[in-house]
Image (cartoon, rainbow, N blue to C red):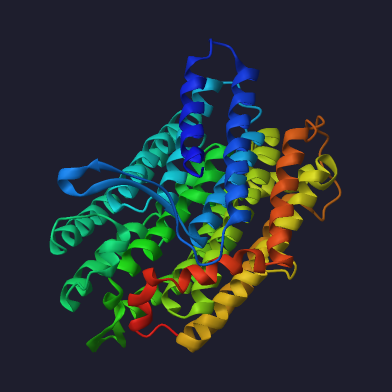
Length: 501
C-alpha cells in the first residue's frame, strides 16, 4: 500500500497537467487531495507497523541482467520520514494557496518532487534509490527558477550543480560497491551483508558520505542551502528544509554508514589530532552548527536568518550520525522529523505570512511596521516556532537535541560542549530576529495601509505543524518505538560490530 504514496503523487502531477488552462481552484484542490491521500496512506502504515519489522512493499525484476530490482521496502526509520513528507506535502499546498502564476504547473512540479522524495525513502534497491534521488533535482530546480524571488536563477542553478556533484560522488561509490560485491545485485540488504575489504570501505565511505552530506548542508559544502532557501517560493523552501535536506542525511545513514561501516574506524595515525573519518565529520558538523548560528546572528534579511538556522540545525543531525551510539542515532532520526516540521513552519511564517504581505525581508524595515499588531497570528506563530526551534521543553526540538547531546557527550565530550554553545547561540539569533521583525521598541511607526489578514489555509497549515511538533515533544515514544528496533536490525550489524554501543 505504501507504494501508492509515490503513484498518487505522480498521477496527481500528470492529472494537473491535463487540466484546462485557468483551472486555478481545481489545481489547488487536486494537489491538496493528492497530498492528503499520500499522508493518509503513510499514517495508516505508520500506525500498523510492527516494531523492528522490515516491510517489503513490492519487489519485481527491473533490469534482470544487472540484478537490479524495483524493490520498495520500509522500516521504522523510513516510515517516520515518509510520515514527515506527508505532513510537509499537505502544509506546503496550504501555504501555496495564493499561487496565481501557472498554478497547475507549479503544483505538478510540487507533486513530482513529493513523489520522488517518497521514492527515495522507500527504495531498498540502491539503483532505484539513486534514480528517485536524481528525479528530485528536476522539479526543485524549476520551482525555484520559475516561481522564486531573490536571484532565483542563480539560487536554482547553484542548488542543481551542488546536487549533481554530490550525486556523481554517490554514483561512483555505488558502482564500486556493486562491482566489488560481484556485480550481481544492488539490494541494500545484500550489499550491507557483503564483507568489503577495510581499505575499500575506508576509501568509499568518505566519497559516498560527502556525496549525500552535500544535500544535508555539511560545512563547507553548505552554501547552496541559504541561497536556495531565500530564492525559493514558500512551499519550495518548506520542502527543501523539511524533506529534501533529509534525503542527504538519510543517504548518509542508510547507504554510506550501512555499506561501509569500517570506513568509520581508526586510520592508525593522526592528522591535526584527527584519527578517523568519524572525527573529521564530527568536527565539520560542529563547525556547521557554530558557523550557521554565528552567520544567522548577523543577518539583516529575515529569510537568511532561517536559512542559516537550518544549516546549524542540520549540523546536529550530522553530529548525531557520528556518535555511533543508539541514543545519538535515535535522536538523529527524531531531529530529522523535528527539523522538518519546525523549519517548514519558520519558512512559512517568513515567506508566506510576512514577505508576501510586506514585500520586504529586511529586518530594519519590518520592525517599524508593528507586525505584532498588523498580523498578530504571524507573530504568535513565529514565537511558538522560534521557542520550539530553541529547544523549549514540550516541543520536538528539545527531545531530539537532548538525545543527540547525550550521545555526543559519550562519544566526543568536548564537541558536545561546543554543540551546547551552538544551542545557546540559537536562542540569541531567534530572539534577535523575533524582536526586530515583530516587537519594535519605538512606538512612533509611520502610517501604513492595513496588511491582508492571515487566510484560513495558512492558519490550518500552521496548526498542523505546531500540533505535530507538540505531539512529538510530549510523546516521542511514538517515533522511538519504531526507530530503535530499526537501528537494532541486521541491516546495522556492521556498525554494531565496529563498536556501536
